Picture: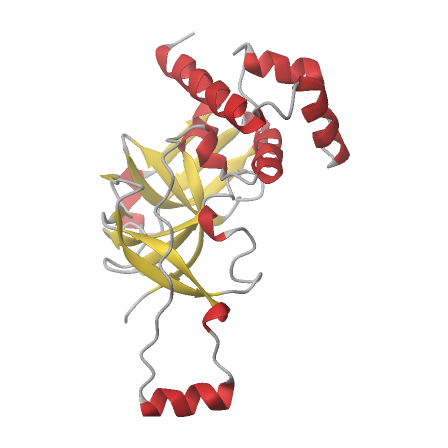
Length: 247
């Protein structure tokens, strides 16, 4: 077993045990997951706990949904994210007229963390996931945010490999709950690489269990990413849910 694989298993087991706590054992957790449509045995869960192997994407997704934790949490830091601030609006006379007419409510919007570091759209740039620059307001709709707000972060784009769709300075919202390569085929995805992150189109080749991260810009083909095996779960950060650009 190489050091990277051992480290991932150590982190996953620690987080799985923390999520299970004293409430669940391998039998009760397997029964709960089976009831949600995931065919898994208590022996398989014990195999995870004994660090024999890592879960497949569909099992990791089920654990994420069951324990209400982002999928990244099982392999990342346990530091509690900075809580969103209370939304305060300065109601000028003009704004008050508008909000009275359209029944504006603060509850209609959710603040999502905006990271300080830029996200690389070409070569990966280092990013500190819990270093928050500010907050982006998102309309509180299941169509915009199908998952809980804590599953999302926003970041600025740097580089031109996704041009002309994404340009430097654009803001992307990352849905960390969406990390299954099968459902992300032909979607814009954030990948982790060399302690940084990068945006690419995800192409999934199921017969080879291969993930390819392709740039939009033909001039940036050298930045193409190839992932196989455990690298897929380790290096897919999440789906680009939406983005903002000033053109």
